[in-house]
Length: 86
Image (cartoon, rainbow, N blue to C red; front, side):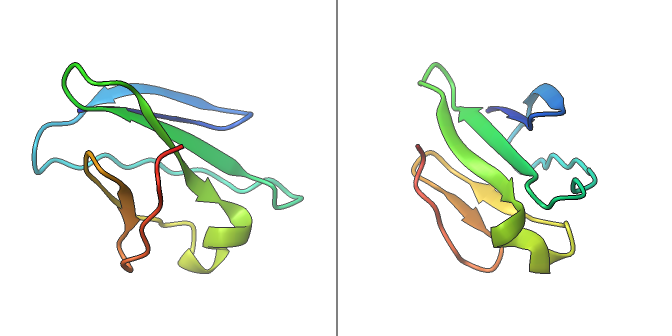
C-alpha cells in the first residue's frame, strides 16, 4: 500500500508500507487550531482513496497522536471510530 498525507503547510510525500508495517509522522498544530492533514491510500493497482488523517477539532483530545488502522474498505481510529473514504 502507498500512503501520503499533507496539510496546507507540509506535504509528507508518498510512503510504501508493507503488510503489518506502520507509518508515523509528527507535527505541531498551528496557533489558531485549524490544522488538518488529508491522507490518501492506494492498494495495489487500485484507485486512490482519501480521508482526513487529522482534524484539530476532532482529534485534539488525542494528544496529537492519532493512530489509524487502514484497510481497503475504510480507515478506523484505534478507538474504533471508522470513517468513510471521500
